[in-house]
Image (cartoon, rainbow, N blue to C red; front, side, top):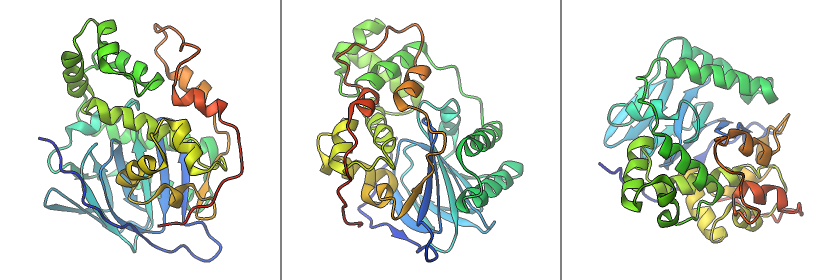
Length: 315
């Protein structure tokens, strides 16, 4: 059953102490780590999410008419949920569709939100406190996030192996998220209809949503770049900045200006990879290299010149 689209809802954020950033962000390529003093919003995104309060108090999430309360929550991809945690310092880890443990979260029972118990919950809280305070940075964050996510995944059902044709289609879309399925499907020996159905069954995500997730992830890689949001939207493959803002707000509950403005958000760029090289390293080795004219956002990430950022008003 398709999950309902989220209603329009203004995100509410808890103010940080004077002199402190409102939020902290670390990009892992296939995951995003986010910490903030508190928030309330309604979102629906492609990512699988681990969410915890860093003080051990319960969070509240409403999804499909159900309310789940626990210090740490697991949220399935495409779950339309409202998180109410204005007085709770939060850690959020979003796993992108290409993450090795992404598909573990598809098996979460209705309503798509589940409490996390035991040692993984405690590990997430420790990680969240250290990251939010700035004591944990760079590759040390990456290592602890990978360990915490792996420990969580071990508590969930093991998914069936992914059909290699789905994986190949993911790689092809990564290089050109705007490519027509009618052009890609024959290389898999499938019709467009069969390829779309196989993709949705294997990844648990509509193909169109996966294409949008590529653009969102590419846009996120520009955090801290100083580029204007219009330039970021173009480089990431969006039609225009209005489309970028709409998709971003649906995924993260607020306009991109709220996240990309370094006056509000501290972007941990310590030992960050070259994003094009990172992308190529993740690619299936049996595929030919991207064509010189490929429109992959990761190629644009290198080509886009660095120019002063145009400030935009926060929502």
